[in-house]
Length: 296
Image 1 (spheres, rainbow, N blue to C red):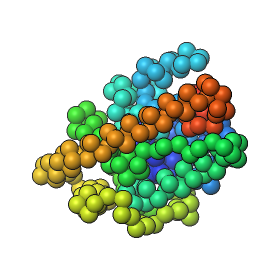
Image 2: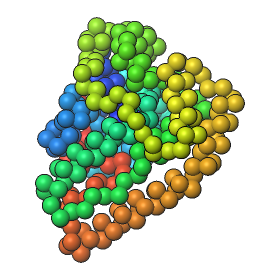
Image 3: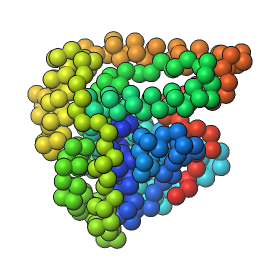
Image 4: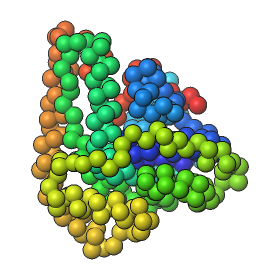
């Protein structure tokens, strides 16, 4: 299977659109459930997500509702969006080649905040008294997921092509041709793949942020610059990443605990009738009811 991965809002949907246009059969729908009504502005060309965005492992294959099961040899040409936490938990047998997209951390923070605002607006339209959920800090999320990706690649050593979001938009044709050549599929349509890129859909361009201390901001910038330049990670730099993660772990754990506590409180309120069904966010990594299928 060809897996497209990255954080949310990093260009994974754009890569799905590119590879689908090239001729790869996809898992996932452009707009699962009611996303076409509530989140279309966040990605006008579609998200192409399925249950498998959580990972390809025992909770998602076989399908939890239908029992449908697919074998690795049946999906060698299929392309599937799997966010980084899902990739880390995916069975190695299903990981053929991985296309990674990385977005600059300030843009990620701004873009994800914009997406959350859309979600909150849609939820408040249904339930005006529903409080906004506690969410994991976007910058910490960018760090934890990309750090986990670097670690997973180093450990499991699957074939991977890492591409920056800026690099793709600055020269779509060159990047797409290079990536498709790496995938090595004789049935692809390169011209249609190139035509699928819509730079006008970009909503954020390097906004300012003071969400982390300068020492971490500089390290995050260096990590992104390394990806953007197409360079490998030097051993000395990997050591710096490990040291930074060690410093950030207490902050990450506290943020995760706050999110978990809020989800438990929301679940309790729903059980007590204080918050209507669907007013809180779905659990991490899940899609709304009705959006989980192998269609497409």
